[in-house]
Image 1 (cartoon, rainbow, N blue to C red):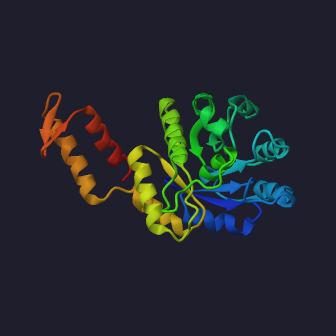
Image 2 (cartoon, rainbow, N blue to C red):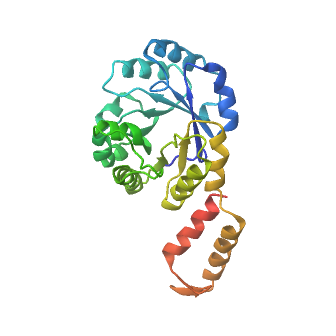
Image 3 (cartoon, helix red, strand yellow):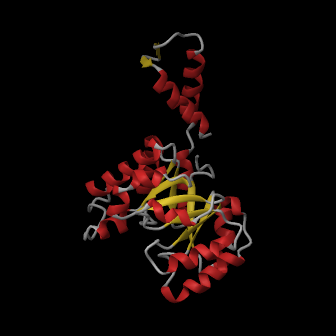
Length: 267
């Protein structure tokens, strides 16, 4: 199972229904958020907004509250009353919690606590899981830390380790992996670098929190013409070769050809 709606996933607070349609027009998919973006006294209204939402269900993800909260059961009941069938589960830690969803649901496990990252493999293995996502700030908070990033903007080692673990756990089960949001909205260069690293590493999408981040993510995931030209050329050259061969001064074997096919798959 894979997650193929496009690379730019835009969070939208579920208590702001006037933004739903606009968010979906701007991004590849919208994540209607019932969790952190909504204050406790607005949760009930946010659920009602999701139930009443008239937007394309094929490009909507609903983020529900963590399974160990009182809000989780209410969120699940609300989602069942909608046409939306892709659900992101905040602070996923135990795959058994996913069993409340019927076979018609596709689940995205959000690994954003130490326990969630530790159990990423079992979360990915659940039959309804289609993707894993990781989150830096809640992860560091779960460890008693105060910041996921160094003063120069780079992730601390603990965040980089978690990112890699989630990506590997997803890949091991044939699931997609979604990269975390870049909280500094004005740091376009930083977002571009992280998104470029994400696609090069094997992530299928990157989540974002502001519409102006969408184009940056799309550009990073879209291969440039030179890369597309190389991919086409190396695959064409492989048709006349047997096994390993030399192309433009580089040894080419099946893993390199798979890289080329992945490039063409992102066009």
